Length: 255
Image (tube, rainbow, N blue to C red; front, top):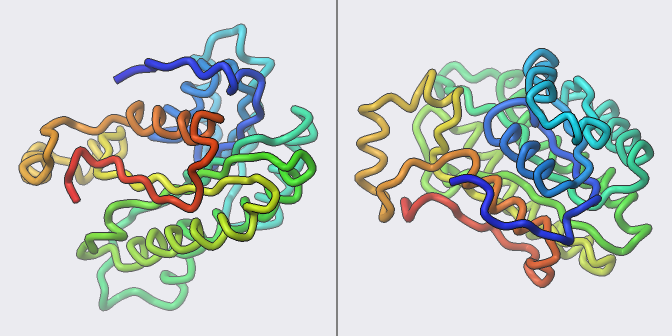
């Protein structure tokens, strides 16, 4: 599904997206650009980011900001948010999308492996939100969108670290919604099913695995990055003004 709704209240809003160069992140960059928002995004892969930017409408380029960032470096991450906000004159929406769902052998996970997993899949959401809060509270308004996964609800073999981090994001979403609510800053989580990104199709989402997965879905339809981006648009917009502290599943009825 492509863009179906134009949210007038997203025009000229400043949006910051982590992990925005590919997959769901890239779809969100495109979707917010289509809403005529000002979009800042970060990613470790500068080549993919430049390719994405080059494929955006030329009329939108003045409203796009990018920096190559390793999100495990929390000071660099927070500085990028501060710099993007200064560049665009504020911050209205933060999307904590970055993640890495690499599989791990449970018997071979070292302390380093475990902490690295958390440093990518859990920690950046907190430090991004912390930096965003200091900016958003000046206007007593904002929307923070975290990305969890239905794996946090179901459990999954070979993904204990990832599942733990994504479960943590659901708890963090609830906690931050209470921390930030007095300043009218909303915090919600998107909980996707198995989304058919290029990375997933090239690695784990084989035809056989997809058929097995689809059998358990109520809606027998492949979930595309654009579908998830549409939900992010709604949660970013004022149409969802009274929704906070929620974890919203988009999985075609898999759970």
